[in-house]
Length: 115
View: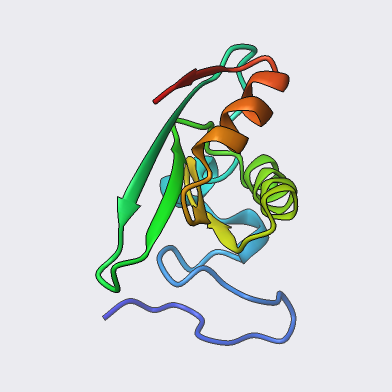
């Protein structure tokens, strides 16, 4: 069994994988997750998926894995479409078929659109 600190009030939260303080985490997965640089040209892929409940959702895929950018895009697009949604790692999902509205909003950012 590893000798690692489970709790310490002096450092704050610790990474469950490596045991380092969360701020100085040495795990390779956390070093790059959600921090990808935004390239000048992005090709967004639009598609509609059916959920098990029978409802459709629009997925914008192929976006850079940048947590700040994706959460901002999700907020902006949800407000413009008047619907709910969420952001993930490299994608944004909106409720309903929003392809026509999203196609224009993505093009206004200067990005390419497929689908």
